Image 1 (cartoon, rainbow, N blue to C red):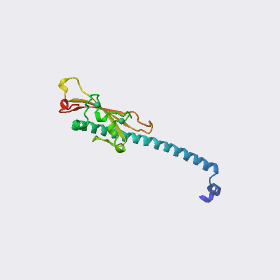
Image 2: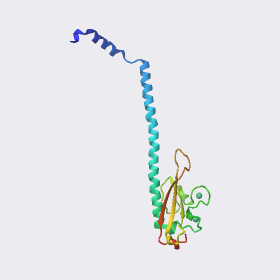
Image 3: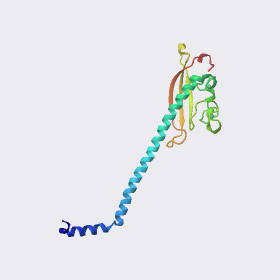
Image 4: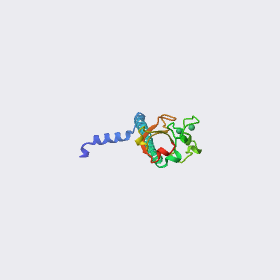
Length: 173
Ligand SMILES: [Ca+2]
Ligand SMILES: [Ca+2]
């Protein structure tokens, strides 16, 4: 069968030897480059999403730890004797936008409070007026961290919880 079509066999040999022109190679490179750039851009977005997911997890865990710690250790650390709604140790008396209890060595807290490196938080207390609810403390935790897109302090993530403290009325806070 092949012998009856000698011309086709010859044509095939010529085509196979031809190889690629410079233009074809360049075109292939351009296509490859466009593909690589697209994938690279996707990687960037994926990294940002990944960091955001880690931040969301960390701040949720940190806020939960803060609420639990206030419920368990209200007296020693969190007293608000001057009744401005902020634990006295966590006020910003030197006005540098960082609660003073996070100004220990290496950015670690000065007092024994929940801590995750790279995050800091402000705590606000308020109490219900109802005298039947003397054990209730409304707690707001605002957590700050540095986001690459926002640079410095960034917008806080706020968490709210009502914490019940057995001897709140006598705590002096
Ligand atoms: Ca205070
Ligand atoms: Ca400060």
